[in-house]
Image (cartoon, rainbow, N blue to C red; front, side, top):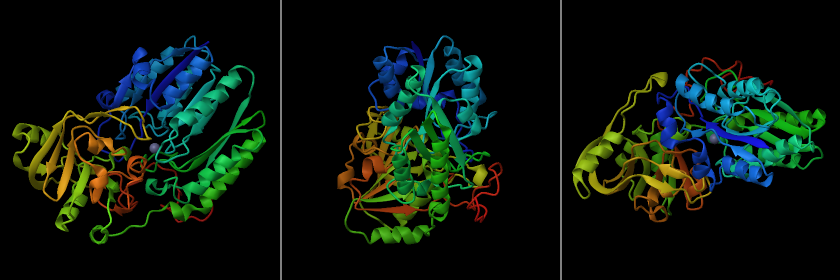
Length: 491
Ligand SMILES: [Zn+2]
């Protein structure tokens, strides 16, 4: 038996000006052939779960490609065609496919990146059994469902269950291949554009929705039940909240569970909207907290959702109000790193930090901030994740420097990286448990590495293309009406 095992992942923020070419995939990870096993075999990624299933089934693993890029703008046409082409070519002669996708990939020429890939795969190998793992932030489409055998999503945000979820869906499809199961799927969506900041699975309403999905999986005949929060920053027709249920043999129970989950999501719609607090007031509130570490979230400039990671508004306000003992991860500014490398460790420098990227989609121009400090650390930016998310994966932040202003130590990187693991600090000699404030350009994923430390968490509403302010985002393609862009009361 030959099993096609592949990953092709990107969460596309259509408002982001950051280009997504093959070089960007290579920067985070683009592996082919035996390199796929070397890169991911010892991790807790879905590919590792699939490889383990293949071993257990005595199957030969065919690994044409495992590629992921940090979220950013539309995927370049040639990058999409290269990656999809590698996977589709490899399907010839395979008995089944186990895929790790995101479910919000938008290419220059294709809005539904995953649906297109799966349709091409089935075109090349009609009837091919296909298992698909998607991110919790998947924008599910009809084409994805029609061209897969069993599709499932993560039940955690931060995403710490990738391995388990991939094992679950892989087993369903292997059972189907051996005649032990007959997977049938029911899916649907509600007109709800839920905000990422309100999708953490430790908080209501996602916590209750995930609990309902887990309970449904214990019902007879149900093999998998998924609620997708969706990714509101991909402005495509299918963006938003959806559910998909895999049952064995009989579609009726799957449809019932789907309806129940979607009704519950719709009822909770108001809770999926983030409530704004003025930046200066939130920073002032943080300043009154004496028991650290306090986590401060610059969530509007989160590169983990396509942010440019160089908007300085929040850092400027924290400096202005004089908060002390702050560590920051991270500002993307390769030029600033080069300047600090040239100056050397211990040198006193003044840098026009960040603000190198314009964001035409939201009418925001990049504005650097003059920061004076001492170059504290210089590294190559490479380290391995030891925390619960992306465990075992090698992170490459590119040349990295720490700029120390006295009150604030800023990690400056050359490649976008969302700080979800303490390694972002420990790799440059900073100790998060001992800082009073940990300022992170993150939204929910920081919880994987930092929630156990945080005595308090304050969200700071800065600027950027991952804003939670819908008034700033100029939606064009998402289906209308949709809540909360339209104040509708019926799904
Ligand atoms: Zn996600």
